[in-house]
Length: 126
Image (cartoon, rainbow, N blue to C red):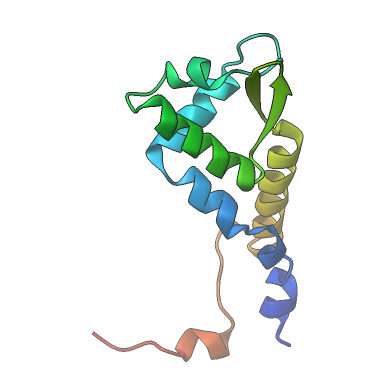
């Protein structure tokens, strides 16, 4: 195993494709921003409260919330007939901070370089 592989090996554990896929959809990013703005002091927001930020139908917002929940980004709590959603802040921050720390460990001076052997693989002169 090369130094680059051992140094950056921890990076893969922090890259969670499901999280990034869920966050890459513009409506879901808007929904996440709406949830971050709060509402009832951490009590969460109903689908209709969240939907006030979006131009899409309520059922579409509900589906987006389900994707965010399945990715572990938000949590849902039933209160009576309502389901309230809130961001899983601690878990999301830990994942993003872990990813940032792993990137910094892999590329301590702010630039990532490949080993000399890897540098020459797959390159073509254009």
